[in-house]
Image 1 (cartoon, helix red, strand yellow):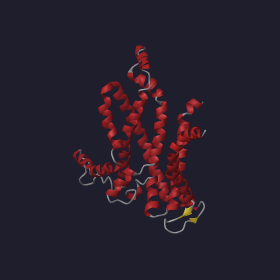
Image 2: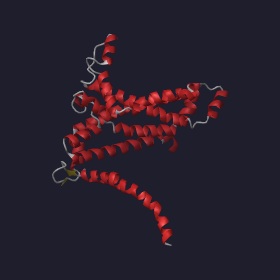
Image 3: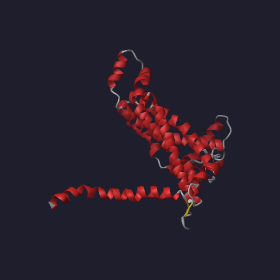
Length: 298
């Protein structure tokens, strides 16, 4: 009887370390930061409970928070359609015209996604340098004037949008390729026999069949867009710019959180920003899901 009980306990003993690590490194930080968001704490002195004061200040007295939200939403609204269009067209192009030899092109287009953000920040800083950058050299060769890309607000936003779209379109391409592999070839062959052209198959077979992948891509792109931090932070940090770039034009919500929590040491207020961001992401993800599933629910 004793031997049987020991065998029954073995699975629980094997999964216990996972749950202990989860409690220690995932659940505890989540709950700790949530309680921290209701306090005022600089990391050294005693925490002071302030209730909802941090949240009220964020939504009523923090113009930089609203600016970071608008910057982030602007980047998301422009980059997500770009990433989806380029990723989808590239995936369809590779599947239809390159067949089994597409692996090399897949790898080349996936490189930006796996490149370290530090390298990306340095490369784009060199490319968009006002005086010696490659982009301005091309602009001047074409008869234009050099642009201070990293020193003025609107061009700085454009550079961040280019980086964000360039980094992620390869990842979208891989997701769409996986979705394309699940579409039965018989559908395309039947359409071809009925006289459908490639463009008709794309709109009436490929796009409808890719709807589940499209929903996943849009939702995860929104979440990742609101989490954007590495590229703009490194780009303007190495360019000796103020945090968030000129006039805070490239300050995302996470950069605002980083500034408050780890530069101003306002950990309570920073935690409140983090949870405010969580609420915003949840709302946008829910609305996006409702809109994209509207046809099926009706």
